[in-house]
Length: 187
Image: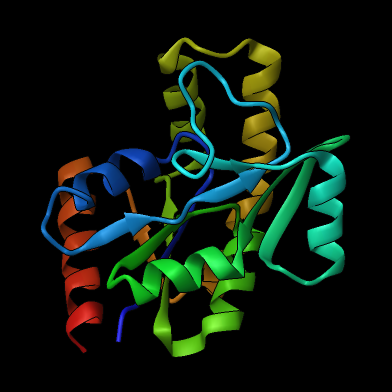
C-alpha cells in the first residue's frame, strides 16, 4: 500500500532543498499536484504544475468537501489539495509527497492517519532563520520580518508532527530525512 509523506516548515528552513534531494533517492516519491485559483504563469500547464480553477469553482469544491486542505492566501487566491488527485496518485503506485503549511499538514495527517508520516523541518533558531532569509537576498526587510513572525507561530505546531528534523547542518538533515522516510516506507 502506498503512503503519504507530509512536509511543513517555516520559510527558509531548507524544506524545499531537502524534498528535492529526497526525490532523487529512488523512493518512488511524487509531488501532490495542488489546485489553485491563480492563473497559470509562464509555461505552467493544467494538471502538471497545478490544477487551475476559477475562484467560483474552488468555492464549489470546498462546499462539496473535495479538499484535504486548502487556504485562501489572499482574497479569491486559493491553494488546496484535492482528495481525488491524491487517491489517483496513490492508485498509480506513487508515494505522495506534500509541501504544505502547518495547518494543512495537520489536516492531511488527521485524514490519513498511520498511512501518512508528517515531518516538520525546524530551523536551529529564529535568529538563524532571519539570517538565512536575509542571505537569500530575495525579500525586503518588511517581508523578512513578517516571515520571521509567521515562523514563530508555525514553530508552535512542531509537536503535532510525527518527526521533527532540526536543520542546523543540511547534509545531516538530508540524511536524517532519508533514513526516517525509508524506514516509514518499509514498515
